[in-house]
Each structure stands twice: as C-alpha cells, then as structure tokens.
Amino acid sequence: MEMFLANYAYAFTLLILCIGLYGMFFKRNLVKKVIGLSIFQAAVIMFFVSLASKMGGTVPVKWDEIPVEMIDGYMNPLPHTLMLTAIVVGVATQGVAFGLLVNIWNRFKTLEEDALNEAILEDSRD
Amino acid sequence: MFVVSYISISLLIVLAGVRFKESAQPLATFGAGVTAVLSLVGWIVVKANTEAGFPAIRYGFGGWAPPIGIEFVLDGLSAFFLMVVNGVAAVVLWHSAGNLDKHLDAHPPTFYALASLFLLGLNGMILTGDLFNLYVFLEISSLSSYALIAIGSRQAPLAAFRYLILGTVGGTLYLIGVGFMYAMTGTLNMIDMMAIIPLIAEEPAVLVALLLMIVGIGVKAALFPLYGWLPESYTQTNSISSALIAPIGTKVAAYVMIRVLLFVFGASGLNAVWPLSEVIAYLAGAGILFGSIMAILQKNLKRMLAFSSVSQIGYILMGVALMNPLAFAGALFHVLNHAIMKATLFMVSSHLERQEESVDIRDFNDSYRVKYPWTMATFTLAAISMIGLPPMAGFFSKWMLALGTIEADHWVLLGVILTSSLLNAVYFFGILEKVYLRRSGQKEASQASMNEVSWGMRLPALILALALLGFGFFNVPLLDILQTLFPV
Image 1 (cartoon, chains in turn brown, red):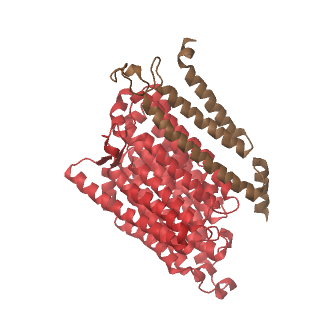
Image 2 (cartoon, chains in turn cyan, green; image 1 turned 45 degrees about the vertical axis):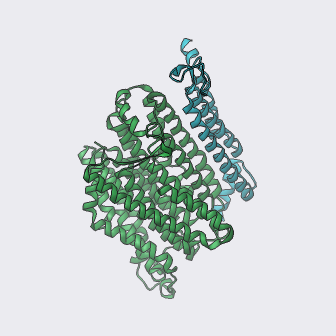
Image 3 (cartoon, helix red, strand yellow; image 1 turned 180 degrees about the horizontal axis):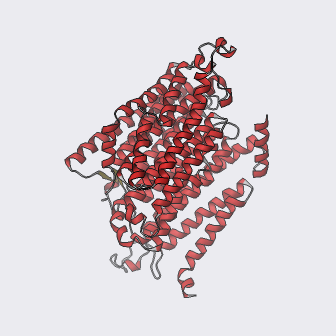
C-alpha cells in the first residue's frame, strides 16, 4: 500500500499507456487508432511531468524567497521543456495521420480495417 | 553545417516551388551533393584528427557548454555514416530527375521538400550527441518518410498509415526509455551518460530503459519480429521514394542502435543483467533467414527487394551485436554496401516499372537483355554483390561478418550467414537465369528492340554498381579504418 501511494502516478501512467496501446492495436477503425495513439503519447507526457515534480516544490521561476541553490524548492524544469517539444511532435504526427486518413477515405470510401482489407483483396484479384 | 544546408534547401524548395516547378529537383540534388562533399571533408578531417590524437569534434549549440546544452558530435562513426547517407542520397536525387512517375507529376516541389526534410532528420540523428535531440530528429525523418511513402499506388496511404502507427509506438517507447535513463542519470548527453552508466548498470530501471530503447529503435531498424511495416511500405510507394528510403532509412536506425548500445551503454552495460547482445544477434539471425525465404516466395520485384532488406539489415545488426572488431567492421562495411546495392536495385526496378508498367518477376524473359542491356548489366553487378561473390564489395562484408562469428564462437550464426548467401543466390540467379541464360530464338527476343531509359537514369545506377566493384577492390584500407572505430 505504501509502495502504491509513493508511486501511484506511475501506476496511472502505465494504465493510460495500456489503454492507448489497446486502442491502437485492437480497434478496427482507423480514426480510433489515431485516438489511441494520442492517448499513448499523452501518457508519456504525464510520465515525464511526474518525473519532474517534487513534494513541496514550486514552479521553476526564480523567486526571491527561495534561493536558487535550494534545489528542493523548485521543480525540475528540464522535463517540462522536453515535453513541450514532444507535444509539438505529437501534434505533427496526428496531423500527418489525419492527412493520410483523408487520403485513404478519398480512395476507398471507408476507414474500417475489415472493409479496407476486402477492398485490397479485390484490387489484387483484378 | 550539414543540417543547416538541408534546412535551407528544403525551405528554398518550398518557396521556389511556388514560382518555378522545375527548380526543385536540381536544388535538392545540389543540396544533397554539397552535403555529401561536406561529409567527405568531415571524414578526412576526423581521420587526420584521430591520427594526430585529437578527440572528436564537438559543437555546442547556443553558447551552452555541452553537458547542459545540446551538442553535435562528429567522430569517426558519425563521419562514416554521414558519408554513406549523403553520398547515396545525392545520387538517388540526381537519378530522380528522369524518373518523375505518374504519382509525382503534380507536385515535384512538395516531394523534394519532403525528401530534403527526410535527409535533414537523418543527418541530425547521426550528428547529435543528445538522446532527446535524437528523438526529435527521429520524428522529423519519420514524419517526412510517412508522407513520402504515402505518395504512390492506391494502397500507399494505408501502408503509410500502418507504418505511422508502428513507427510512432517505436519512437514513443524510445522516448520512455530516455525518460528512465534521465531519471537514473540526470543527464541526456551521450558522452556524459557513458561515464555514469557503469555505476548503475545493474539497476532494474536501467534494464527496462534498455529494453524499451532496443524495441523502439528495433521498429525503425526492422529488427526481425518488428519488420511488419517494411515490405508493404516499400512495395506500394513510388519508385523514387523507395530508392531513397530503402537504402538509407533503416541504416540510420542501425546507426542509432550502434550509438546507443555500443557507445553509450557499452558491452558491459548492455550485458550487465541479461545477455541482451546475444538475444539481438539471434533475432537478427532469424531475420536473415526469414527475409531471404520470404524474398524467394515473392512475385513482385519491389516486394522481393523489400524482404531482402529485412534480411540484409539482419546482417548489420548481427555484426553489431557480436561485439568484436571484425564483425563490427563487417557490419559497417555492409552498411555502405547494402546502401549502394539497394539503391541500385531499386533504381533498376524503377527503370523496369517505367518502361514495362509492371515489375512482376514472372514476366521477365530473355527479351529484357535486348531491350535493357545497360539496366540489366547494372542489375547483374548489384545482384552478384548481394549474393556475395568476389570481387564485389558484398563478398568482403560477409567475409568479415563470418570471421566475426568465428571469433565470437557463434557457430550457429556462421551457418546462418552461409545458408542465407545460398538463399540470396536462389532468388537473384532465378532472375538472371530468366534474362540471360534462356536459349534465345524465342519470338520475344527476336522482336524486341532497344527500349532503354534515358542516360540521366542509366548513368547514376551504373556509377553506383561500379562503385561496388571499386569498394570490392579497395576493401583492405577501408576495413582497416573501420576496425579502429570499434569502441574499446
């Protein structure tokens, strides 16, 4: 129990990670796969942010009451900045993914995995 | 310097493309050519530096000293990979001038801007000395490669989408691994982390990080059970994209594997808890056999080449995982060889696709040697190197890998290398036999006339094929240098 209380943030991160993976690999609709993808990436962002947090620490902006040398007083700013970049990457990935989905829709008129597989089989028969 | 040249070129293409459609291809080729020359200069400088006893060139960004700021590192390994990637890319882009097929006619500037972005990402991955920065460049090159692959046949966007899902999972797993390593070491700089890892190598968190990174990069490098995205993507995309991505995309992932596993973790850090290098070596061995067998079964030339990529990347990763200088030099030499061979073979397939509208192997017959004398000669050179017959370069890299397996006492893997050479011979000689050895006099051959592609396409392919012969003859000095790159 104590172990869980100390690490509950990681346990929830793992849970979100698994939900994302489930969405990506077991849902048959391509849009739902993209939703799973974004949940998966959000979990990683949560993971990094929880790495950075400290009990009793404040936002990493210089404040006269806490001297800079007292590192327990501030949260670690580096993971946050890394995650800003990762969020941008995630947005770009989803942009590309939806772009591809629009293309797939225009060509096949469906986004269901099973229907797509059937269409491809028909293509190869001709 | 390298990255800046690609950034500026890709931006220039987008801007110039608005007004002048024709300027994109020369600009992209020029950019890749300049970068290739710069990489050659970099290689010579690094070589001279190492001989004089100076350390690698390190460049910190924004005036921050390296452990805090992001840095680029140019050492022997990165200089070698830059040379391979940029050299092959320049030739492929040159070749693409005559090769804008029906999928690309509409928007050449977009295509070349994407291609330049893709190369920018690869150059960044090779040069960076920072694990998180590597992730960013990985995603840059991946995102542009998804877009490049989506330009193609009717099914191409679907193949690209499946690659996107798998590739993003791989990249994200790598990112989680980086997070664990950051939590354990407090640094993201590779050289910094290298010094800390021996102290913490047996921590479970480091093991988890290592596994996540191997799986993440393994997806990009198409390590055996994770190759799923590769065949479909290379088959469905247009011929320029496949000639551009197939030779160098997976190679750079292999470079990341070398950099992270051998340099950052080192042999002792990698095998501290579980013998992971053996696991990778045997997975790579399984990939070699699987890829070769699947390649024999294919009817489509592009798909056959894609499966052969799965098998060839196995050689490289196996050489890396064997952890001795002989196998390492063999793996690096194979990176060079395979990049050139695959580029040549995909160029040949694009010539045939252009002239025949099909790359079905069953359609190959003796008329091809009359219709495409130059193309088929190029194909033959590359195929012989692929099988590994001397004096082609492919023989020497396989030879070094075989020596490496003996050195490491992995007799099973030696058997894998030898068997797979035979399997390679099966699928390439199958084609050569159809084209060259059938008795002429059938009516296809007598009625056929010369139907070659333009010299602008024949020449680059031929130059690459002859380069294989050249590297085969001059393998000794190169292999000597490559052996010294092995980290001790």
